[in-house]
Image (cartoon, rainbow, N blue to C red):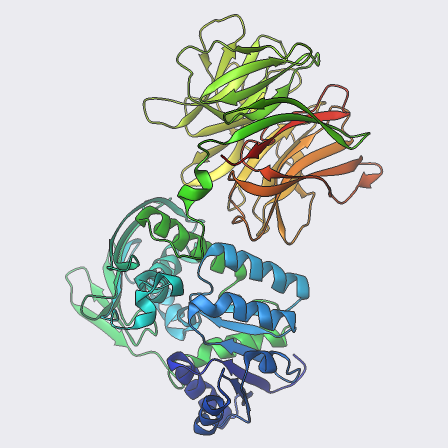
Length: 633
């Protein structure tokens, strides 16, 4: 932003817009570098009335007219959150900087798309979670850092108010319910005071979630209870409701007292109590108008520095909170009509599978066999004579020349998923099997000659993906203490070694034929992309840079000059999702470290996803690879 005064505009003239307008008007009157520039409504009469009431210079009768105005410095989107996605896309296409009222979008899938588009266009984008910008937040943190309540142990938060009479909150098609409107404040309160490294001294994250929801008669969530356990042992007890009496309070409990915050959203008053419950001190934090002004000033400061997001509410935090709310709704069975339900995505009943081989030199696919059931993840043997795949919990061997199929004997290892690799010694496979004891995936070795399976990873869940050329080490994705990272372990068993620590899912590790590098995929950049690292976990390097596609399972050819990978479009999956029943692409990247690597290019478009190329399926000659496409039953 080059101008000393921020020309501020509001898109939408509803209730929340009046709050922001009052705040911006006060900033303008006080000469704080913000100008009431423009408002837009779908009705020009409504826009003019709003502009006159709050002193905005311009009024537009359509959102597009405002988006086209090149003089505006920042647009605040104040429409219902069910409309945010389309409003954001409109404004980003015209290059406008945006402050978007919470909830940012209806779900994380929409959020990931608009964040990627903003980055691609170099446009400023921020979620208007005003609580994170308040001076009161730092005041509470200062008390904690000064040791005034001892060591923080837990948080309680309840933001409830009777709002079920509001038609928008009743309707699933408008992303109604308590969570997106009210519950986000309780979740934010816990996140602010339990994940700050300065307070806890370590990076803290959620390792366990227990939750329950009572639904409104329309199917949206009416009252929600959420209990969270964090990596360092801290806990959060959260509640939100749109049908119970008003309560708006948060408490941070320490070993030597507690801090009570009146009003989670604007933190109107903060009070400190000793262990006996006696009030020790109380402060009413400063406010210029109604506290909406602080997020405006935060955006102004970020724009003046040339930033594309606010430090107080970065894109990664928005994605984290949106993903958390998606996960809660999944557990409650609450979805919106414009979303595809998990049941629909994962219903593979009646699916047909087509085992095919793609020839890199001719660019043609050859059908090996059609199956009337789901098969997944072909491996190609080192001698080139057979493929293995999983189906209905078992592993099968397919002889390429004869087409003969035989089940690999695995005894009690009868619930294998699509994570398996052939052992270099030719004795069998290492597989991921969901054990009957707890249903979690563990890695076993099964044998072609029928010997009893051998357990490799007692810890679970562990999802196998790679093996060293000498057959001595496995690489796998494992969830440990709430985070999914890449680990290695000796095939003979022993202690596992953690190779990645980046926040978010790190998956699909696979050794190259020399055992020098491990290729994998990671969501750490905001979208799932292909990465590579040395076998010891050093030199972790991003290999693909696609803003609008999620790249999974990069498979390196035996000659180390080709990598195939699976790509989902951003509108089909969230960055961390690997699901079936999607239109996907198989992409090829070629090159070497000396010559450099090409951008991935699409070589196959198909209906597939989960199971298509989960594990390395290159032929020994590096000229062909096997994959599975599907046909919906």
